[in-house]
Length: 422
Image (cartoon, rainbow, N blue to C red):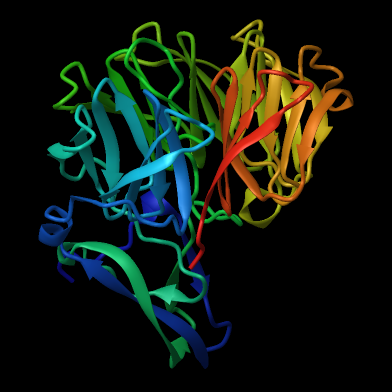
C-alpha cells in the first residue's frame, strides 16, 4: 500500500492482539487522520495582530520580549519593557509549532516536520527567511482512545482525527495497531523549549526543553536522538548529524560547556567542548519518571513526576552531586506533589509543582532545601519558570505571571497575562 505506514520506530506502537480463540467480534474506536497538505503547511506563515492566549505552551525571553507558544498554532509576541505592564504586540501564525529558540535576531521554530528561521530584527516586520523541510520526524499525534487507521504521509501532516466506533470479526492471528503518545500529562505536550544564556545573542527559556542553542549550534531532540543544526549563518541552518541518546529523552539544558539531557530513565551528561560533536560523559539513572533538569555549580536539580505514563515513582525533587561529571551521585530526595519545570538562580530554587502551585526555596544548602521555603503560591497551576535575575517568569494553565524576587523577604506579583482556555 503506497506511502501507508505506521512509524513504529519513532513514536512507539503497541501491538494489541484481540483474540484468544479462532474468531471473535470486537468493538473499538477507529481514529481516521485529518491532514494539512504540505503546500498549505508551507504557505501558512503569517504575522497577525495580537490575539488572546488560549493554550499557552513554551515561553522564551530575549531583549525585553517574551515569546509565548500557542500550542500547535504559533507564537505570541509580548513587549516586556515594563514587566508590571506587558503588552501583546503580535501573533506569529505557525501551524504545528511547539518549540523555539533565538540566536541574535533569528528565531528558530518547528512547524510539524519543518524548521523555520524567522527574522525578528524588526518587530513591526517579522518575516520567514528560511524553511528546512522534513527536518524532524513525521509524528503521529496521540489519540485519546482506540486505534489509528492507516497513515498516508503523502497527504500531508496529521492535524487531528475523526472518530467512529466499529465492530469487526477478528481471527486469532489478526493484530491492530494503537498509537502510544510521545508524551502525556495534565499539561498536554507543553514540554517547554529552553536555551540558557551561554553567549552573546542567545535568549533564555524554561527548563522543559527540546530546543536549545550553544555556540553555533541548534540542538533539538526527538524521542530518542539529538539533532544538530549548524547556525553559523543564522539565516540558513544546516542539518549536520543525528546522535542516538536513549529512548524517551525529554529535556535539554546547557550549562557552561556541558549539555544535560533529561530522560524518563535518568539524566545524560554530554560535553560540548566540541559543539559539533557532543561527547558522552556519564549517565545518572533513576526510576522511570518525567524528568526536567537544571544545573548550577556542583549540583543538578531534577524533578521526577510519577503517575500516568511518567511512571509509578512518588513525585520528588532530586539533588544530584555533579562535582565529578564522570560519576554523578544522588545527594538528597525531597517529596513533591506533581512537579513540572524548575529554575535556579544564585541559590534560589523555583519549582512548579502543578496543582500545588509555585514554590520558592533557598537552596544554598542542598541538604535542607524544603526547610527553607521562601514562598508558596498555592492558587495557581504552575508549569515552568524562567528566572531573570530579579524577575521570574512563570507559565501555568491560566496564564503568564511575573514576580519581582529582588527582595527575597518580599517577593511581589508584578503582572499576569490571562489565558482564555477554550
